[in-house]
Image (cartoon, rainbow, N blue to C red):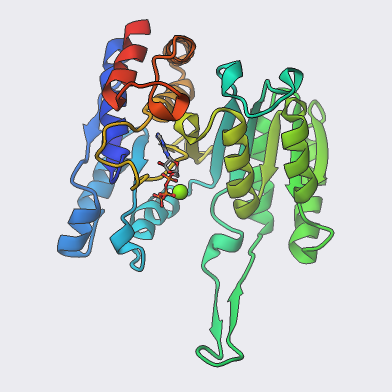
Length: 338
Ligand code: ATP
Ligand code: MG
């Protein structure tokens, strides 16, 4: 497996996570590419070389910390790493589970509505983030910015099929077909066709505004939610907050056909706390649990989740979850539970 620690808190949470994973004795080796980062990009204009890509291709998966640098925001740095990996491996399915690990971490008042345990399946290659568009009549008072919202039959069908394939009982498709007409009707048609291919699962539909409201009023109603790139981005931050925040949110970008995946916490480089040694490593530990599950190391995945739950229950956590441990200490607390 290849490890890309990246920038900001990425290397801190990845190092801590690897030290926790060491305790598992799983049949996995780690090829750590810690030279792929913002300073490499500043030096050479390239962060990820063809040689790096070859090493990544020879592995079974990628575990990634975070990429980004406030000083490089106007460059193509992040896209040159993340987009390149996404396109190279066609990682079209972004899988973002949200599960409440401890009751007191819920922001909801009503205890009976707190037990969120759902997955946002976000289309990862199309939508508003396709990069199609531009500025018309730039730098005039009539300047008009256009960002096309791309949906293809192929792209929408495969993401909805993936959502059905990971659901035990039910899939809720989320769009805004009442206002965004062309894409909406394509999503609706693909969803009806996919539902017919999966008659054993319950298929439902919500407009994205209603979905946002219902996720807050009663998240326990949801199992798998499938939606486009931008709605998935937003709804998965919402469900992460329902499940205790970014410090616990895991994610995987998958190609279900090849089985290749890029596993990364939902959070970014967190420049405000980078270098302070207080970043929460649990999102990355839980991301590693997703990876183990996908590699059919189920016992290891369960052990990691049980250990995280136990450490949280004892308050052996970083400041974002109300504890006073450092990144390393929080990872050591999980390791101790293993
Ligand atoms: P990026 O542009 O790389 O996404 P960002 O500025 O959006 O960076 P995020 O990493 O998304 O920052 O974090 C958003 C907020 O959540 C920040 O205030 C950050 O400190 C906090 N945060 C994110 N991840 C963690 C973590 N693992 N532990 C503690 N706090 C975190
Ligand atoms: Mg961010």
